[in-house]
Length: 209
Image (tube, rainbow, N blue to C red; front, side, top):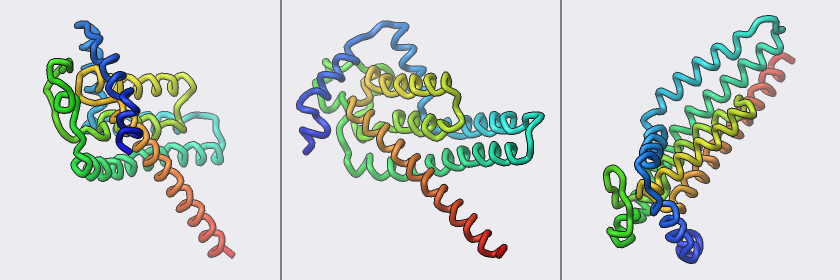
């Protein structure tokens, strides 16, 4: 199973080297910055930023109460999904990483074949926490992003994911697993909140009758 879903018949290591072998000083700095932006401890910063944007977005003039209510509910839902997904994602990562305990590139491959930028890490490779967090941020914010911001968001997710490979911290399979994990978590939280809200509306309608 591992040979198929993780090693990809050797493609996982091949793709790792295709990315990790390319190094320039300016490129390394860009990748380091991408990894820096994908650190999960930045959650508070992103939450504050999202909340401030929401306050300005809902406070628009010349709108009727119905449009205002819809706008407020949309932004509140995004903030709720972002917060709950971060909490659930953290639990899953904290459980899966030590449970699976996949080796990182410096441990799985000959050390002289891996270009390491920054601090070398050796354990808990699957899934990538940075890639997971980047996907969680963009997927949670997706409903309120404009077309161009969605393009920027996709670029941000790819940037963070590629940076983990470029810096020698993760294999491509780790990054992909992080993407899939967080996307699944965000969708799960979103649909769960939708179900709760629909149940509440039905209950309120029943009480009014």
